[in-house]
Every structure is written in C-alpha cells, then in structure tokens.
Image (cartoon, rainbow, N blue to C red):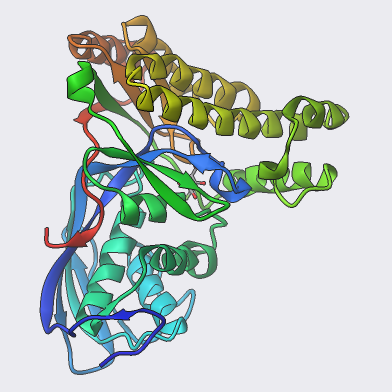
Length: 374
Ligand code: GAF
C-alpha cells in the first residue's frame, strides 16, 4: 500500500486515465495575482494507459516523440523535452511523500501542442492520475493541482500559476469553472449554450505560444511590483481600483499591468453574472473588452491573435478574445447561430492576405474533467 498525503484506494496493476485540455473563457494572468478565472474543459484529451512495473523505472511512449525512460524519484533537469512533464510529475509526487510505482506509460493526445490550450497540463494531470491510480492513492484534486504546479515551477522552471491544473482537474461537462485563486476554490457555473442558441468556436492561430521565455515572468514581476508599490500582498487586495491606479500614475508600465488585472477580475464577475442570469449573448462584448485590455494594457497579444479577434468580430462573432498565457496561441469566440461559416471564412481569408499560416477552427462545448478511462 502506498503512503502519501491523500485518501486511499486500491492499488492497480494497470489502467487508463485521461485529462482534457482547457480553454479559459476569461480571466487570464489573474491566477498568480490571487484573482478570478473562468475556464472550461475541452473535448480534447490526453489518454495515459499505464501498467505497473516491478522496478523503479518509468518508461513513457507517445507517437511522434522519442520514448522516455528514467529512474524514480528523479530530480529537476534530469529529463528534457516532452518527457520532462512525465518525469516532473513523478518527481513532484515522490517529493510530496507518495510511493510512486515504476510504470510503463503509453500516451496519446489530441490536444494541439503550442496552441495555448494546455496540452502540457493535460499531459501532466493525466500522468499524475495514472501514477496515483497505480499506487492506490486518491488525492484531493486541489492538493493534486498544487503538486502538479511544482512541475512547471520547480522542475521546468516556469513561474506559472494554478489556473490550468485546477481547470483540468476540477472541470465537469456543461459548466464553466469559476476559479478563485486566493481561496483556491472552484465554483461550477452551468451553461447551456445550445439552449441559448449560441456556440463557442476556438481559433488556433498557429502563432506558437511560449511560456518558458522572459515575457510571462516579466508580466508576473510587474504585477507583483505594482502590488508592492501599493503596499499590498497581491492585486486582489485592491479595494478601490481607481484610487490604486491613480497611485501608480508615476509608473506607467505598472499602472497598465494593474489596470488590466483589476479590470479582468471585474470582467470575470460580470461574465458569471450574465451567464447565471441567462444573458449569455451579452458575454460577447465582455470577451472583446478583455482582449482589448490585454492588447493595450497587458501587451501580451501578437498580430496574429489581434487579427483573428478583429476579423471574427467584424464577421459577426458576438465577442472574441485571446485565451491563456498569450504571446500567441488561441482565440475563443462566442457565436450566434449561423455565424460560424462566415467567421471561419473571414478569418481564413484575412490570414491568407496577411501571409500567416492557415488557422484551425474547433467548435467546443464544456467537457468533462480529468479522471479514469479514456
Ligand atoms: C498560463 C499559465 F500556466 C497559467 O498559470 C495562467 O497564468 C495563464 O497562462 C494565463 O491566465 O497558461
């Protein structure tokens, strides 16, 4: 029987576990500012078929990638490339006191890589569930999310927040998940788009999105510096946004970053209120306002995503915004019935004119979160 800070289940010789990618409808870069976000799970998943081994080795295969093999418990930096997410999870679980078993893992995924849809968190969470499942432990999902967060923070070296792990591990079909990063809670916000006669369309701009570079870390440092100038632990503690922004007037960059974050928390609340009031179509303009704030104040957009958002909105989308960490990646749009063809055609044509790679489109509804099975 394995030990660790978790509930017990029966150890397994083999099994299958899976985890989705995610879209963040609104509330980006708010997580490390102890703020609010509203993600949902995509109907695209990473599937891990796992079999226990008698030794201390983990071997992982995934089509199109070199196989990976390492000895437990491992240490940060030991495995690089895609395998760092597998080795990082094993290391994080072992560091927390779990008796991680040796295992053969066969991994497949239809979450696009580098599209800002959390393919790496879907992989990490699926591997974490598989290793826990073989070990016979059933950790609290928030605790597991925090362990998995150590993979990026301490194994890979990216100062990311907890949004993606919470989204992947706590989502459920038919709902958005209101994540409060200060309280570490997730509140389901049911949404029935079909009943509202609406749909979400994800545009994968194919502009590669990268987080392990300086830009994400720089944004995080600016937000923390803004909070520090205000004498606060985090921007979530701001009680009077106008007064706080006035106090940052001498620091235009910090002021812009803070304006985006404070506005984004308010926009998340606004979207939740609209969804809960059944006024889902009105969410569109809030999404577009969020994108404009990201573009002008947080300055984490790129020309490809700005073009996708502007073109989608002029072609009839109710609203659109870049989703996730930014500096590339995907756009989420809210569409009225019948708008999808026009939006897809307009964005494809605009990309062709601009000489950009052909974008990909994916109509999505909120899907189930991570768990046993495919
Ligand atoms: C990335 C990070 F991993 C998240 O923690 C979050 O900050 C997101 O960017 C932006 O909301 O996905």
